[in-house]
Length: 366
Ligand code: M6R
Image (cartoon, rainbow, N blue to C red; front, side, top):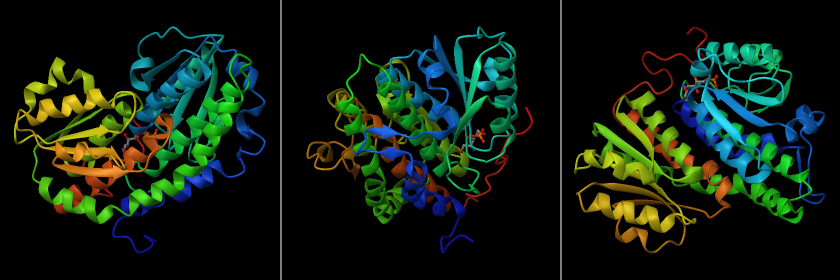
């Protein structure tokens, strides 16, 4: 049942290229510069006409939601807020007709997300779901939605469900752009082409598994780890930190890299490793100077960098090189080494990665 893998989590990490292909299957046509998103096709006018969107979720699904905000704002130019379902539900939230609420949940059974969706619906918002489990409560109670088709996820730490959610959000954002007469149609076909190229690139990254294991061997006894990234990779930093704390019980924090100097830099010394997502995008130079600041405080740096980057190897202690892709698709790639790093560190510490202490696969109580 684990398909030759030692744990479900590892199996699910390795399934990601094929899961991404499944999410896209039958939905993406580069030739016609078109997307066929069955579940939302009849609601595109409502989505495009939204005053604003509010994404509600918990945990890893909330991280996918943050990436969704960046995607929808960039491609569809619709204002998006992201909130924890547990905060939204108890806040007497401002939400109503004209708002589109997107709830994201792998299990479709998370109590807080379900309660938040009910409040949004009661107050007259249109509620759309992005769920993995077919027929789940959240999927049934939303007005319409999209399934991620990642297949059953057994490991408590979410991996393939996350990448499937991000692919779904990417497709939704591009679909909304396509209908906007003020935006060019040419570029969307490039985006679709780039999207189709991601699964092969993910496969390439999975081949680095042994290298990542050997990096993990130098860090398994850390007590605290910091994860930093910017833009699309800021939520990935949060997700990398969450994976590590869930399964290895090491204290980890994710931050936008530029926030480092507003506090977290005080933590840096030779005992606090810092994982930087430092791919070549418009903020690369700035992240590089953050790395230098960490190095000058004797901090140890693991960098996720773009293939062919000759500079970074000179300042980071360890570098994991990943293939180039459009910035908006990078989270689908940068998250993979972070999942593997957390996995290996946890197994080296003898932790039960599939069933970490105190956690349940779906949180159906508050
Ligand atoms: O099933 P959901 O996506 O609604 O679950 C939300 C969170 O409970 C979940 O993502 C949790 O944070 C995972 N253990 C993360 O790995």
